[in-house]
Image 1 (cartoon, rainbow, N blue to C red):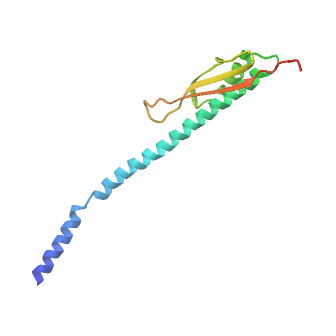
Image 2 (image 1 turned 60 degrees about the horizontal axis):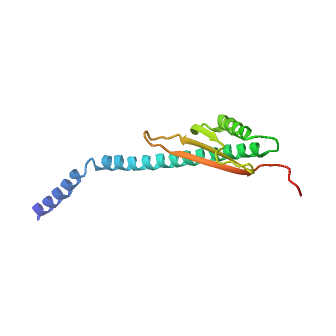
Image 3 (image 1 turned 120 degrees about the vertical axis):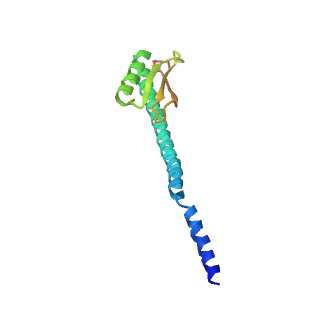
Length: 138
């Protein structure tokens, strides 16, 4: 009986020796997954922030360009001024008034998003439309 007890104990302890080091491997794999999720959350936040900044710049430009007596150039200048103050998250931003008509102004802001991952290229394009203020006959 005594030998049976020893052999059982040996098997139990042998099983414990085989598992040595697995905690480190499990932690390393889990840490990679957690870091990936953290970076993904940060990148999503950067994308939506850049999108909101581009939309705000386009809206500011449309409001400035639609005023009575102003031009499309005034709207573009206002959007660029907004981007110079708050547009650090929109890289290489370009502002245009393509798509404007005599009755409506359209300011378009295009740029790329700051990224954490090298090689990941995310772009934002936002526009704002507004009717141009003008005198009309009643």
